[in-house]
Image (cartoon, rainbow, N blue to C red; front, side, top):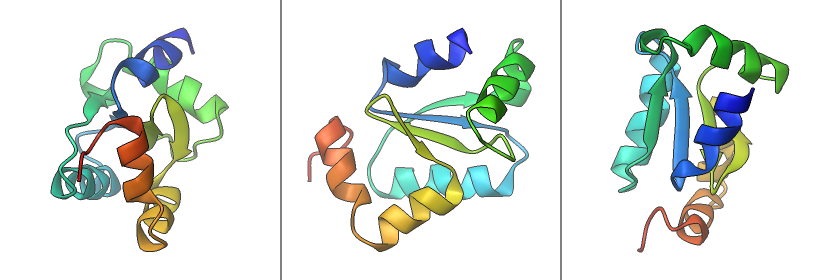
Length: 102
């Protein structure tokens, strides 16, 4: 849990992902298309990835990825991020976190 809580606030947008996860790819692409340069932690490529995956599951993620943090705060997974995007809340949230300057 310590590793997740230390990594989450290190950048305006932090995504915990797995390189083989389609929904992770979709979320990363969304942020790139919005002009965001997120910190991405691929759990399947990290030596402590399994530990971080368990920590994310303890936070309520099932499946464990993608897990998105904006401004150091837990936003959620694919459903939450897409809901924010569709209702117009995601871009203001990204601006407030300093992830974009539109």
